Image (tube, rainbow, N blue to C red; front, side):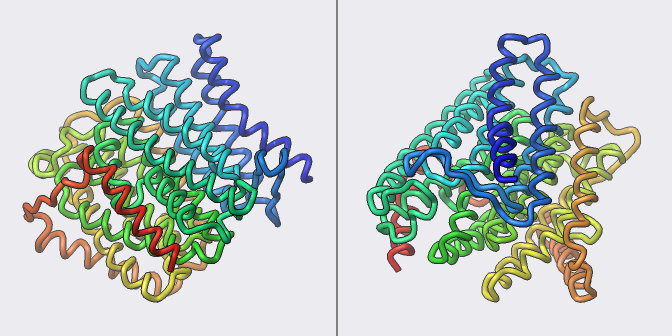
Length: 480
């Protein structure tokens, strides 16, 4: 079994890159080659769910590559597979070139690598490849705006990775290993540099405020890919390190709670639909980090929901909620928006409900208070979609959306079976009460509120300064 798992793992790791380069040689078959990759990743994820114990592999030595496969990773691999399939379905009938499909495969493969490796140098390579491929996808429309946003993303990402690389070297100097466990006993500056780099890549807390502009200005399928899966390549190693190293667990949990509250604080006042979704990506990543051991299930539900919502947001007649309240959308798109919004709000019968219950069960008492407050904010935010006016005569939705959205929403219904223990009377009443409280607050205050929170920390010239402040904060936490 170990030899078989090693072979399958390496095959899953290499397949996206092999087929991605093959697309340039056989551009006529770019769609079929692209389709094979997420299907293979989905099969690998399902195989991992059958494991009774994790498998780890040391391919070379302390300078080499270490891999780990377990059920936590299975949730992230499955998220990558389903989101990639949905994005491919969305662009299938559109005029995207073979270059776009090849970059999708490179993003997919590098994210898989980030989920599979457990050493800092392999992770560095995986994150750099994903950053370059994501940059090319963001810039794909070649407008002035998307090129600037892509360059902004690449610059911030590369600066964060420089900090990360220095931290990895310091960790190796302390323990003569690049494995994640080398953070145990490493100097606090090494911990601070590595954690800060991963927080930036994952779009976490104030160091991740590059994310709203990037995700909202990217093309619709790219936004779905970035929010559904790419940012999780930075978050997943943080979960893995928190599980392996007890000293890191409270740091990751603390940033999880702070991130959940920060993102939702912006989202409830946001009037732009794509920016609201982007801020909720920040917030929901906080929920993923708040309970590292069960973060995989929450990551899966968030990836499915957020990809569906970004794809549907691209089909709405406007991005401005004030304009949308005066227009009507078609009942079909409203039903899909409502299902996704209810799931992320924690409504029963959808995967988001079980994920929230499981997460809140695994957090500490002080975390639960803050996360319940964030859950109310989530219900307030997505009431903006649920209470939009609708009419059969409204503007037609864009073609190609329904195959992708059906796949993602079906995944939410099926994934609801993962944690059936969530269906207790107390949990059901709490979920319904949270959503009702959020909707009431929306109608009483937030529907008409015209408050604009400052965007100072989102400005490019301030992002690097924020990294420095975050570095000091994490150093202090690691030292303590």
